[in-house]
Length: 170
Image 1 (tube, rainbow, N blue to C red):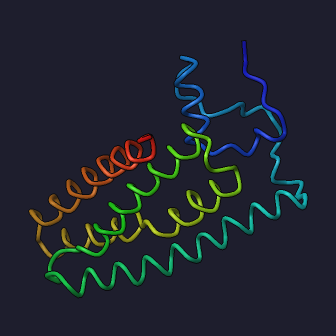
Image 2: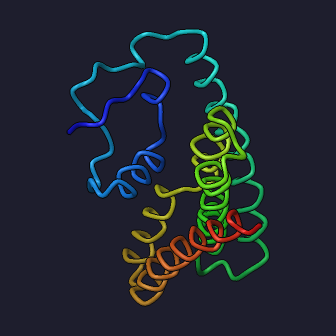
């Protein structure tokens, strides 16, 4: 039997949909794709949510610039430490915010959108990670490129796990 989603639940985050489907044992499909696109009709509530994501993204991007620049200036410039730091911290924060929201119910939909899609989406930077890794390969620094990929992957997964654990602590 297919899951039925209300208008309210049609704007669920991918993580929440994944979590619900995982708990129900229905696999990794993140939603019913036969529904019409709900974003085509902009209501005051949906516009507020778009604004919250945009404001969170602005703050996340500004923090990425500040934190990434500070970390890169503090450590050796031959390795992209700033990008690694923001991706790792962003993964930890994302795991923490989603645990507070989805597992504990402490954050409502608007706060979850602001903090996860907005702030964490603006704070982390996959495109910069990809370009910096490519640059290391282009310069012949294959070991550093491989280390960059491994470090980003490992710290992103560990960060999300630690953040989730922290969000579940009573």
